[in-house]
Image (cartoon, rainbow, N blue to C red; front, side):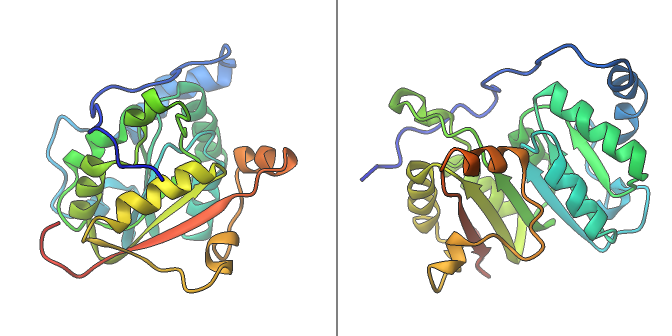
Length: 237
């Protein structure tokens, strides 16, 4: 069984940040649309976090590492009255999401290109109704475990910005990372695992659109694990 390991480095983005050459449309949207959607971390958050969005919203969710944005776009379309803050350091993934935003006219998405930890530090207390962490890099080598997003520092940060009753939804196709996540969050007094039967972690959430990475994992015979944690109604962490 794994231990929790050393505390992580919080301000360095690991892994690649740019891939193949962008198409002309994608480059154009990075120059024109992204500045309008970018979260301004150099300024305090608005008194009402809903004011981040160009359309009225009654709740705000965060997706950490949205990849190509397929889940984030599907969620924004399915819940137009919810605002979504998406964090992703990989510029090609950001460009793909910008295409979806332009095509569908989403007014309930804002984006941070970079480390999600910066957004967690910027957000006010109890601001979020849900957090998505879908197929994060598992960093399978032991010497890289400190790079995993799930760690004590980030658990504390998530507990601060999630309101009581808010859900953290986590998906991975690596059993080792599922075990790691359960151990870290079970040890944190602000979170409780909601599963009551095996189907609760073997089956995705209602309305789940899937992701490209998940489809690849299934083709290669890897079974995903879906974990849901609830923010306890406690004071502090």
